[in-house]
Amino acid sequence: MTPRLRVPAAEAAGSGMTSQRVRDRLVQRLREGGIVDERVLNAIRTVPRHLFVDEALATRAYEDTALPIGHSQTISQPWVVARMTELLLTGRSPKTTVLEVGTGSGYQAAVLAALGLEVYTVERIGDLLRLARKRLRQLGMNVRSKHDDGRIGWPEHGPFDAIIVTAAGPALVDALIDQLAPGGVLVAPVGASASQSLVQVTRELDGQLQQATLAPVTFVPLLSGTLD
Image (cartoon, rainbow, N blue to C red; front, side):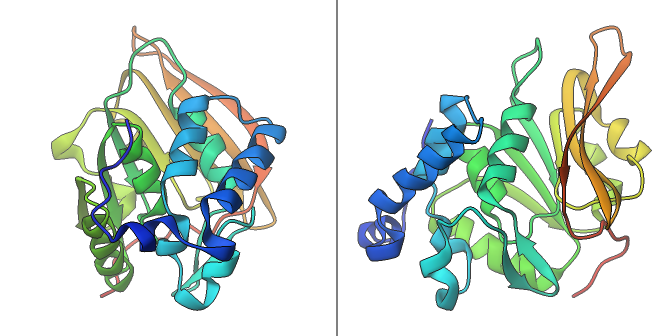
């Protein structure tokens, strides 16, 4: 499923360094980098990443690199977005609902929505959330969001088929694992700033948890509390 873009077609399509040709080259690099799920690659191809960064950085939007979005936060490297999304879709049970902890620019939520998932996203920094909401509305994406401490999750809408955490804590957060449905998958970076790894947790249908440590990554820290 692809998003129904409401922004002007030319703005969404981009030109020059934001054109479809440039996006296609990014998708090819991701494929060469080991991303194999065509649903994820199509979502990356479809969602206009240049609309989720400052206009001054738009020409760099389709580089495979993280970019600053203010408040000491970043929009994640496209390979990391693709890989985490791919990991969320694994497992025996179909994925329908997903909780994102750390809305940031809104790009990861947009990629998830482009896959037809029902997305719930939580952001602790009010300024970032307001801007992300505006972008998602302009794209016509139905993403539910709230300004809150992401470590709490969103229990009233749980359990979730998938949970993605886009900031690194020293350990997995029990409150988030508790909101993972049987058959669900949680993907999060874990560790200190100098030594983080991507971790995948699967809750089996009998409730047992299986954990796998994957690639080394670098994320901003997962903090508690909120900022306006």
